[in-house]
Length: 116
Image (cartoon, rainbow, N blue to C red; front, side, top):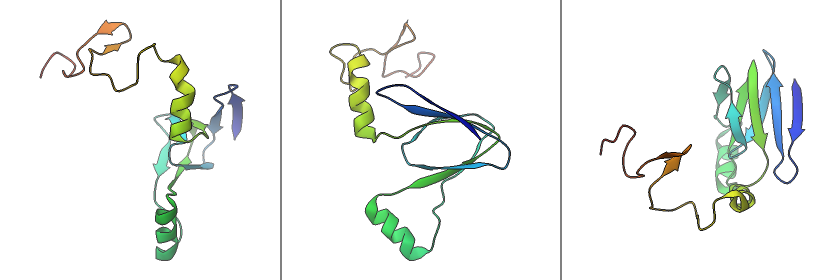
């Protein structure tokens, strides 16, 4: 397994997983995985351990390769706060104004192709 930690305030781990290797992660940690990666989100342990995890809010996944995966360790709330300075001014992420993706104008209420 090869990995590289990138970033300063928003650190991520870029990992190259060889055949037969596995990575365990917590819900919300995965940013990207290559198409050929396999994923299993089933919990380990018995029924009582499953109830304990559910009450604690813990969910985990297993990835195995070969392939690439990018993971980050921030909670969703902290990730949103870290990304907020990079959003256009006046944007909350919940806007009902027309949507623009990649410089292409669009309407957030329409599907691609202009169909309602």
